[in-house]
Amino acid sequence: MTSGEELMLLLELNGYDINKYKLKKQLEFEKTGNNDLYQHKKFASLIVSHYNYVENKDIFRRNPLRYNETWSADPISLDDFIVTHHDLQGEVTLKEFLKMDSIGEVSRESILYDIFDKWVEDYRESSIIQMENLREMIKLLPKKNNKYRKPSRIAFLFTLFLTLSLILIYKNPAFLQPKLFPFIGDSANQMHNLLFDSNLFSLLGVLSILSLATYAVLSNLTTKLIKDARLSKSKRTLEIFDKWDRNVKDLRIDQSGYLEDYVDQVMQNKENSYMDLVKLGKPEILLSKFKDYVRLVEGRFDWTKKNYSKMSKLLRYIFIGATLFNILFYVMGFAMTKGLI
Image (cartoon, rainbow, N blue to C red; front, top):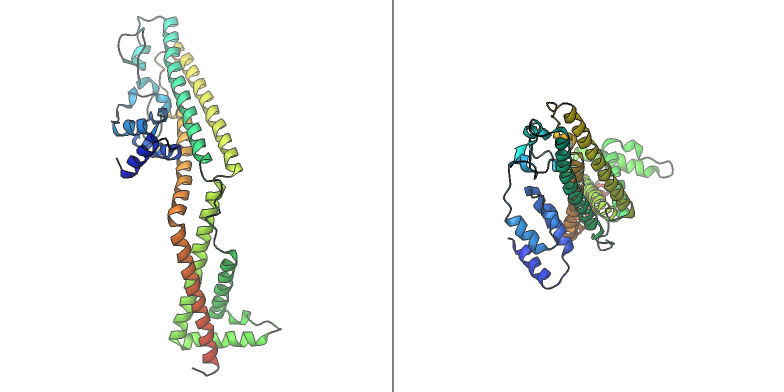
């Protein structure tokens, strides 16, 4: 157990609300394969479940409706799963049960529906609670992020203008010849020639372009990160989450339909019992994608919280440095063209 987890346990015991942290750790712990973590409402019981968990690698004793791609790289059939029922003697695979001659057609159909209903209800409860937890994590994100301001747009546009000007001096000084101010074009042509005559002046120009470009790229990335973090809590995001919730419900309905079709299939021919589990695992696969999205959102906020101050200082220093390089470039260029250096 980490020191952070111990601290949160103490806070919970003293009545503090640590629900956001608990939900975040639940998502983290689920990567171990523990599918029962959603049942724990307290962080203390969640911790106990996580650290006492031993992975059951016998996938055929799990609920097949919780299938995801991590279970096996090979195709898995529904009839390979082990089932139990009060009318059966011990544990048998679904395929073995279907081949039992001692069980009549009516009883076989009834037992199948009992087994499937148990699976369906277990997964329905699990997926509903997990979707509610994911929605709660989104709601618990900070409503406002004014503390984290985006880099100045004016500074960003200014650096783009300076970068473009320097590139034109390097590549196409003739472009910088406005009719109203022809002396600008003359100065640009002179600086262009100096770039090839003076290694020091050329180096200064390269450093100016690189520093400006670096600022522009980092400024844009930081702006996008903060913007994405803000949008993650927007009303639009919650509406999209409602749509995802409906998608999971629709896939669960389809899942139940596949099981009903399977009953009809094996009742007509008990030898025809194969069903690829991928067909039944669509709700869980979609739910896993939603979890990945919420983890991504949490990661954005964590990164912003931990690195915003450092990133702001870095951008400020780069901008100051780039501005100084540019001032020095133009001052040196002017001085050299006038014969002062």
